[in-house]
Length: 315
Image (cartoon, rainbow, N blue to C red; front, side, top):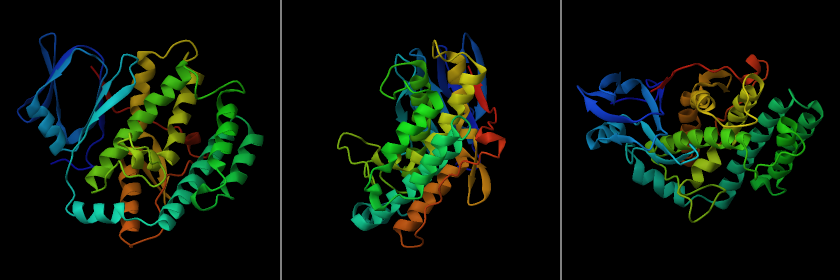
């Protein structure tokens, strides 16, 4: 059975294909030709074609190996995820602790999350607007329990205008927002994958409480990770024409977000390895074995935080 630290490959499927299990390998059949991958190497599979079929035997193996399988809508944005349901030896015990978490503990955890999110935003904004960066950094130092002053919202306005201009709004339908939503969806799904594998229920959040949202906790935990997606989208804006249309080559690049280099506790990991460390720190905190989350740090001195390893397959 595959482990988090073994898997590294992201597979991006944009053309009609049949996905099946062959000799215990992930098999892709297209136009009579087959290509196979060891299951232990695969982190996620993204299918953006509506002409892809998959066998139940392969789905079962994807669950065994903790591989997340994404489907996409007509705009090519991930809209669904198949992820393992079980896999943690203390699931029941951990869930009981999660659902009975005190308001005080939730307030402390949310304070940590937003403080780190704002700090990361300040580090990225430094490349585009040093003045806004300093304002966001100041906000990060004044976050109170449960972010009671809603500094997250104040920081977001400064941050996105610094990155994408004064007229930019996250509510608009444009290629930049499509790219952001695409990368966020991948991170969100992989955090949900890690939460479930750690015995947590993604629906029960720390701050997010939408009764129709099955991923409230994933939305909580991904907040400091969003900045790495923002950084990659900024890089696409610099190197490719993302202003007019959100294209296939953009999506191919965004799939590699999980290989972004991230600093956690002064050690560097690709994102797909940093996420389980963050979630494990949450489990430890809930169990009374710590009081500080291990959250990602955006290091601007390190290749301006944008180093990406190309480990995705396009078929």
